[in-house]
Image (cartoon, rainbow, N blue to C red; front, side, top):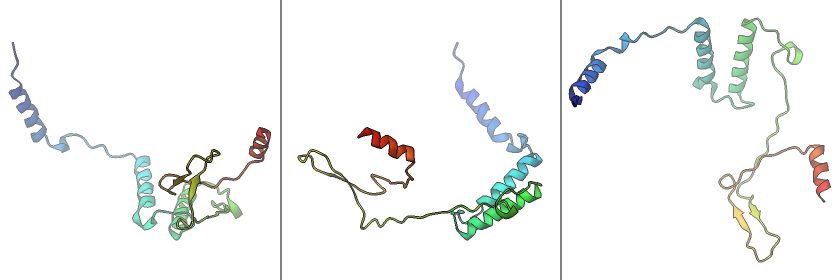
Length: 140
């Protein structure tokens, strides 16, 4: 015997429409979750402007986190008894109008391949380790 599906669908639809969403108990977050959410909201707020390294917004965010550490009773272990540690930051700017990448082959009959920077190829600066230099010398 075939069970008619239309009445079942009607009952399911009626229950979903007439049962208020408040009938589903909303759980109030515990204190730790609420505190975490408050900190997440503060750090992701538009006033933090993305927190790029070295910007005023980054400094505001760092001071906010340091204040949270202090209020939690943590002891600073950074520079001069603070929660901060200075590290050198270097920036290299690439002039895309005067820069290019081209792959050349040992075989002179092969045509070089030009790649568009930041679209077909990316570059990242890297410090050479002494072990890298030694291993490359051993290859020759």
